[in-house]
Image (cartoon, rainbow, N blue to C red; front, top):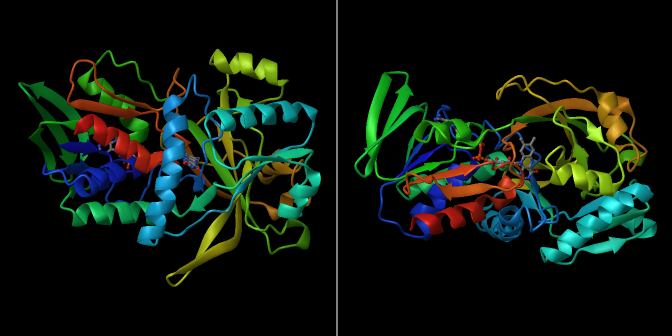
Length: 398
Ligand SMILES: Cc1cc2nc3c(=O)[nH]c(=O)nc-3n(C[C@H](O)[C@H](O)[C@H](O)COP(=O)(O)OP(=O)(O)OC[C@H]3O[C@@H](n4cnc5c(N)ncnc54)[C@H](O)[C@@H]3O)c2cc1C
């Protein structure tokens, strides 16, 4: 069988199929980059291990279930294989009455999704947990954390390769045909074009999964509506009033228009626009701790990332910065008042594989070809859910 794309999802699936389920099939992973380094979404992310509080069951059942399960699997995997990670916990902070309505909704979804040990807390408890953070109320979510995404993908790749998976690097899938029970895949490499046959294809091409789905099925409904998430950083040792004790600190999830502008409106108006697909719901610009490596040891580092700030990319590879320090400052100052624009410097950008018109992950067989499985719209919480997505997909295959 063939997996297209060696991002976190392709590597997690290759690991799962080759190892834990002991499949006897040959597994080939085709990747257009020259190394498995998480160059696309899989390293250009916030590295947050989400807990499953955001995803309403009615429109996001896969995100809800696979995030919750993926959270547990990821902690277990990281512990077993020494991948740097930490269960830091997370605060989601409401700073005024309007934000409290959004917070109540997240609390409701967290209950519906059975996210463990989520607590609603008040100002005194907030400042006990993070002395420089202020708010009227907050959710404390102890199962959230952080992971080093590049080392995670490297470990998945290495384990899959040890199990006999073949990774064809610097090979781009440019064509897919079908005859009898076989697919013929055209790959473009430095030495020219080559075609090989395979019985089963899994499309894990991330931002390009819509294009791959469209090659085999021209009436495929999937269009990736790429969204850029830019981020910045600051050093918490710089001053006493921006020191952090290592929690993820988030605002309430607001609506964002397609051009990246934030919707500021009462919750009922947001809900209406969100359910009609006019705005998307985003975790918003948040503060996340990072991991510092010292030899083979790791600990919470001095750098805190601030992001993602949304904007519309020119194309799927546009990693330029369009937001300045003042923008990040304006997004976090209400719950992190000690920060000043001059503390903040720009960091990186990533592009999210947001699927136009769909909220949930899509993991399904192509309607015309039962041995062609599309994994598309795997945006956040795809990192957290990666091992659960791999398990779910493996169940479709085996
Ligand atoms: C800004 C940002 C912040 C995020 N924060 C978080 C977070 O904190 N927590 C969380 O859980 N999730 C987060 N995510 C989501 C998470 O990063 C993604 O869901 C996950 O990395 C998706 O992995 P993937 O393998 O599907 O995609 P990718 O990493 O994009 O991998 C797809 C691979 O397919 C390859 N490919 C594409 N086309 C072809 C082709 N034709 N031939 C061969 N190879 C091809 C690409 O080169 C690439 O390596 C974030 C994402 C972004 C962008």
